[in-house]
Image (cartoon, rainbow, N blue to C red):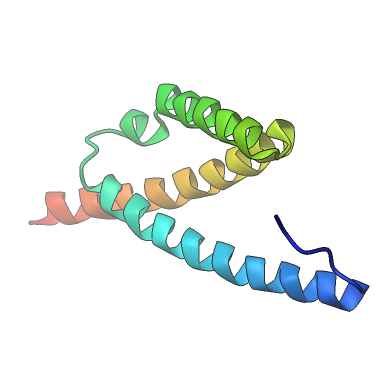
Length: 102
């Protein structure tokens, strides 16, 4: 169990530490998303709405298991997935352009 903070500064410091970890994990996730673009044949494969819903279901369950708000987790994941899909679509288009140029 987390030790309670004794000041607002301490709360903010702990949040900053978590943010550093989250950004590092987002970078790792982003690199995997970039790799995934190379395996997908179409933009529909990139968008993959069924996969999105599968991920949302999984993270909502994880939220329930850990005591996090499932609603907040879903909103965060939907925003993150949307941003990564946009990035992956750009990567997918570049790869398609490179393939047609060679």
